[in-house]
Length: 89
Image (cartoon, rainbow, N blue to C red; front, side):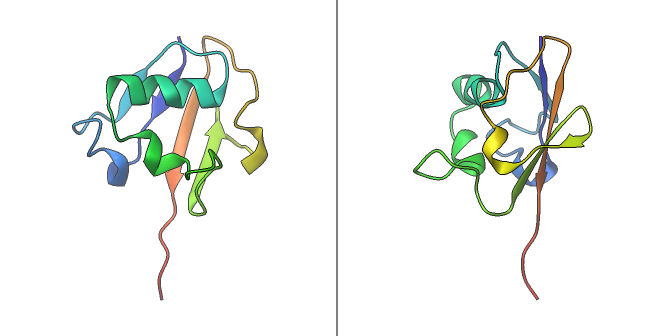
């Protein structure tokens, strides 16, 4: 089953869990599966329109995904990494 790496700043909903194993065949469905286990997680990743939030970057097995690739199919052995970029000056 795919694994979702949760960055430390997004571990509130996951109760500190850094890695969540889920069932899903796309990146989006995997994130939705994390939401089903840990309510409040998905809103950190997607905005109200279902688009990736501005400061969130996704990686699939270490390779950066474009923001419009969240519906890309993934395999059972894949790992999705979430990077929570910080803003400020």
